[in-house]
Amino acid sequence: MRTRTLAPTLLLILPLAAACGGASGADGGRRSVTVTVGYQSKTINTVTAGTLLRSLGYFEQELAARGAKDGVTYEVDWQDYATGAPITAQMTAGKIDIGSMGDFPLLINAARGKELKQPTRLVSVTGYNLRGGLNTVVTAPGSKLESLADLRGKKVSTSVGSAADGTLVRALQRAGIDPDKGIEKLNQQPSVGASALQAGSADALSQFVAWPGQLAFEGRAKALYDGAELNLPTFHGVTVREKFAAGRVGSGVLDDFLRAQRKATEYLRTEPVAAAESVAKETGLPAEVVYLYNGANGIATFDPALRPELLAALKEDVPVLKAAKLVDSVDVDAFVDPAPLARVAAAGGAAPYAAAAPARPELWLRNQPRTQTFDSPKALLKALAGADARAAYVPDAVTGTLWFADKAVWVAQGSELLAFVTPSGAKAYVAQHAASGARTVSFAEAGALAS
Image (cartoon, rainbow, N blue to C red):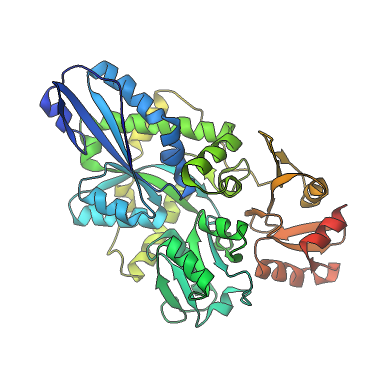
């Protein structure tokens, strides 16, 4: 948790200082307003509204400019949490003004806000994946589990009510497994679940970014199920307390936040390596893992827009949460408020973002400020031979989900080399293309075939 104090200003009448959320008070005659932001530093597709935004100082800069005009000293209290649930608890208690969290937690945020008469509104998106690739089910490196069907009767760790739990529920249902009775679900925080997987007390772990990638990168897990196989959008977004946003100070502060988020998004898009390094420094995560999700071809696409596809997916999430008895109902249309973002966009700033392009193989060499992209996995592997690489990334041949090249499952098909996030994905492809001689090969074999 960290508070930043901005430029000193002139005397402000009390009603204005009290109109904003969080603490406000006077010191030597000066009035101040504290804006409290709840974020998840290690949920790295929220960084444009959290970790990266905080490190760049864009929000503070916007508020300093506002303070110079209205005579207020603005302070930002950044509160870091592991999941969205405690952010919602603090928002409904009137203690957090602006928060960021995943799609399933956003719905719970909306439901709890309505129940407790502290209504909230969804005002922007941070990062998304239109196929659902931000969530992954992983197992231990030496596990014999190869598909979701193998999870029947097993212990699976997840955070109930999270986007990753939603992926797990849907994936199990598609595999013909009752998510309530077919497995033993362990409701755990991500870090606890990671430890349980390593200790052997959990057979698999279903989590959101950046846990699956981090565990795979460190050799502590391997992918079992790619959330993109669901082909359902998943995203994280920004929610605000309605009472805060409706205040004459809060509405302007919210505009400043969204304007700062747009700037942070533009920075991430134009300086992806520097952004990854910055987030890594702030969170302690490996920069290579941050880049897997937030890089130029990363799993997450960053765009604040409240895209119709994402809002439609949010409505499809409601029945899943109702079945789990986590919400009674959610009026998604009433929860979404596009006006603040539209207001900021109309006032100028970054141009509308283009839709995400298909991911391309990418190579990150040591001591290089830029990465290299390639037209094919084979070209990447050829360039990788003998290179002093920090990381090499390759998209899944079917889902498009980016993964570490040395952790992927490789398939040779004639002169072509294809990569897959999971063994089951590779197995299914080989079965469908057996006539053309498709076969799985090791990473070393794929490298030899590429040279």
